[in-house]
View 1 (cartoon, rainbow, N blue to C red):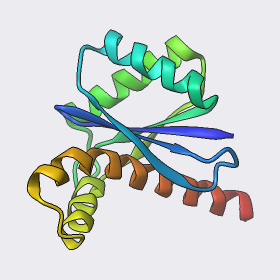
View 2: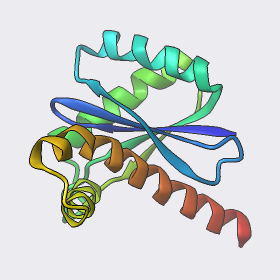
View 3: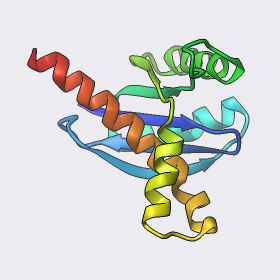
Length: 141
């Protein structure tokens, strides 16, 4: 069961995919943010190429747990994905994933330009890893 994760940024969308067993996450690409219908078209080709069974969308909640404008945007996008692909689409709390991705890249001593190019992809990997770990824990218990 392959799972696709999306980190919706204001300028870029990080994309990660799980292995076919749904155990590990790999960064796939970073897409330029574009109108939803164009973005969904690009995502359609990724879903087909990787034979994806489920989609996880990063859900940017506020630190106090409330849902702000970016969270509502993620909800709307997730609904568009559900309607278009008829696949399970899960919103996954992504608080601090971009910050964690930035920290990892800083520790790796990447230049600012290189960090900008991969931070969204790494954030998508962290979202997917968190989801896979929670799913595995749920299935183990």
